[in-house]
Image (cartoon, rainbow, N blue to C red):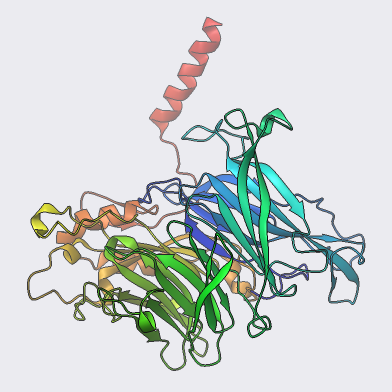
Length: 523
């Protein structure tokens, strides 16, 4: 993500569905890494196109420059954060700048001035006082524990992961060449009343510290290079182009394997559970994506065959996510020469473009301006049973929906048309026009140097595209547009969304004023 305008290392941009939601079209999005709000995690409501809630992770004093030629002071950054599966637990890593260069890691601004960076790990629990709709001014999470310099005063944290149940977490420090596993415990009653949970105060302690083996200690671990298996018994950590598997209870190295796509290091390791498969490893680097089993030989088992998807020539992989509802992997490809991105879907079972092994059903959308920094899919995995052999007994799959966050500051929604559910035995060929792209509000991203990107994107092109849809797809189109702020009228026409407030009619104004006058007279 480079450097932001303040001269310090930029926040890591992330986009995900709120784990406490049902992952439908009304679910809130969790966004962090915006340049104008350092040290904050944001909950965004896409259906209303407004900010729903915020969490101040790293508080700081906002001091402006005293002289015109002075650089703005460095701002705090959230380098890593991880939610448990149900969203009850949150772990964050933040870095706070200090004017004292002897504290923490030494850094320099562009003008040569030195300052220190203090790393802090914070453990959060869901605030039970927050209702389902949320309350104004009440934070969604409360901090239950924190520790400054968790890997020592001169070491930064490279990666963070948390188990599905939120009971254990793992941090990796490349500079210290160790990783630590943290355990959540419930001790006797102590501390402030705000920390109480069922009569006990939750506390986090370091269970053990492991020195990285010599052959891997010089290889970096990226922010998403840590993941726990479904039951938390296996810990996967990437080092450069290698993935290591550890016993999380005994801190024993079980095995390791290499995943090479050129000279690029692994950026993401994640345990996924697509369909009837359990604990598959999704591995991503700039050079490609792979899916494999951690147990079988060469990543393959009797029920699953490992596959690799290398990035096409001239493109790099910038984001990846698992689409649980369609058992496929969504991959974002960026072409630096064209400054365009493309999103494709790859079938989990075959590793080929398409869904359910049907190559004629290729789902992709291209021509996206800039680089897609983050991507997430709507919909949660439906529990399946291998006793269900009759397709008529299974419920219909929901429409495919993807959110993407681009370097131009656009939050985009991609949905499919209902024809994708009308597959016959021979399959139905779908083109890229079958995936509808909706423009959302603009967000301030880090690393955007193009001044023209600061303006809200015009929606006229999307309006012209929507006008070309056939009337037979009005119902489906209306559903897709309503997700993200566009509306469809009865005659099938659409109007672009806008941030401006609608004008009030004369009848509404008269009724509003009359009601208030009557209330004042009664009082």
